[in-house]
Image (cartoon, rainbow, N blue to C red):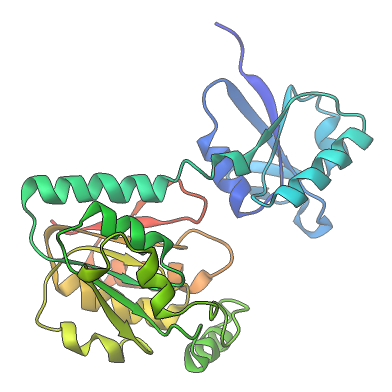
Length: 284
């Protein structure tokens, strides 16, 4: 068998952490390289973080550019070439079409239908409806409840983020959306029920419902912490709750809310190796 290629991961961020875990057996990650001096000397995903110069001194067989932005990846490539690296490059951005979160949701939907697990579907944190459209396509006969302010982050939720030191979220972030645009994206818009406004006040019409599949992508602590018990208590046995950004770096509030909820309820979250650190909570 051929020995694994010694691989440097350039970019010690969220995409890098997931890329390190997604590498197959033909690549052996040796370190992270990063341009940020404050990161050097630390570690990520069990690997040391060093400067690009120190990383190249290790004589890597391959370098993975761990960013999703094509322009930034081109800048990193130019930097490596200027430093004398002439070897092959991998691009984490090329993994974007292979979405572990979407694939997991589709498999869950197939199982929910096969086993006849009852209940509606739902998503909290819809934005422009990309993931909602995937849920709608996977469960075309189920009602899909869509919860969002459709005006971006609410001021009170942002204030809670700042008080707890969880993120740099700003009031109105993700406001570039509207209900009609979301409905146009859905393959089966007639199955959608829109709940516009600040959560959890918008949950009142759903208190008597049951759910089989729920996506929570609210980013912030307050709405995530409110959503978890409300949906979990109404989740059918065998139902699934997918939570976005739990193991990510940008929004620490979602992870905090999940850890608190799981510790209180004795639930074990299953991490997904997607680029945004999602987890799956399954009700037995």
